[in-house]
Image 1 (cartoon, rainbow, N blue to C red):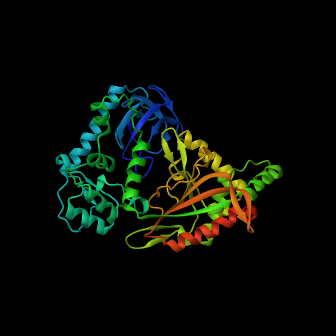
Image 2 (image 1 turned 120 degrees about the vertical axis):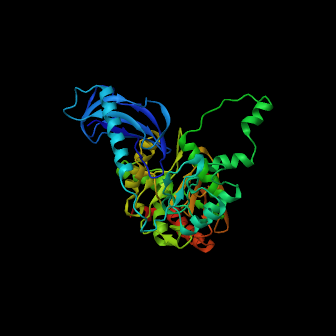
Image 3 (image 1 turned 30 degrees about the vertical axis):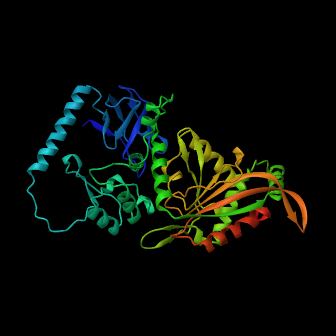
Length: 429
């Protein structure tokens, strides 16, 4: 029987994607494990592998097609022994199989309901009766039902993308119901100024650069984070002359080119082991304190920001962290990260020092509670033992979710972080 290849869900949050390009053409024989196509998700471009052997007889969705829904048939493949079948015969066979399955389903007697099955959301728009499951807390479901909010249009800020009470309240503030605005980005645009209309009316010359899937997700999640997460900020200045000397020592001893950012990652990992309360996330029912130190590190890519994760960072040496970070950053820029390499993390680092930025405050990446913004190291006048001196100073600002991490905890974290940067030999032992 011919096989219908479906648009795969390559991440838990993926509902549609771009079929970037085909690696195989009609008539090619495919072996299990071979790369068939490249799929662009809202986070990265990933390879779609064949799980069975067969012949690619018909491509239904051409390369370059955007917004292809998950589980949409994209191609037809023939199994071994069916190579002589034409594309038309294969499509007819699949249609007949689908029709037979539909008829069998209709002929089944309707059974009385004996169990109450709780569904997260019912798709009501456009008269659809399709039922979709949406991960949401019981309180969020109840609040959404009372407010007429369509849960499937929300991006959850809870663990694993779970929709929680604050997400529904945020939607309420924009009047987003099942018949209203469908996305957070559109909701913000609806209450703000239409930039395109503004530029057109005033005759402002411009070039429209289409938003990538990554860019849209960034806009939605960070808008939601800034408006729903109670941020507060703590700043410290760290002298890094000893750290710069350590980098040179590591280079001479091992040949490894360790960056200041690598040292920051290592220092954050060790500081989080000393102050585990900063390695946490907020939920309506409890604060989740993570056992592993998984650090997300912001990387700029042509499609927007992405945060690959150094997992169990506290268990890795400075040189190991450096090598892993270089590999993750390179693959992030090429769109080659696997979902598990950028989904998750309990704490984030954003470093703009290489651009000469002295200091800045970063927006928290939900559901995490903290993000450390790292500025450039620069020579500044400092006072040492009552005397004016010159030192290389780096300013770091911690953005904190006050729901899950108190001011004292944030201060304790920075108090553990700063000496690791200023007396950095603990980073290599």
